[in-house]
Length: 66
Image (cartoon, rainbow, N blue to C red):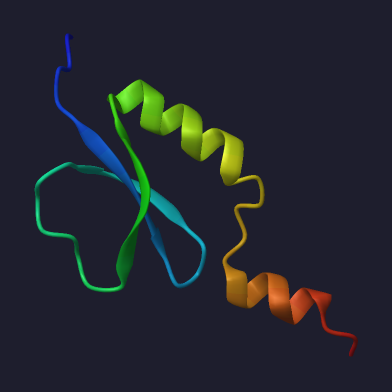
């Protein structure tokens, strides 16, 4: 399948990432991170920056001494 669509990378308040079709309205709770390109380029970017899949709230709870 040849995907010529342009994508952008979004991140939510929990530091979770998503690919979104460029030019479409962004869902509530998500922000652009400034990366746009092919699906592969955006996916590669997410692979580089999203190294801890745990939501931010969970990471904070686990990093706080009991």
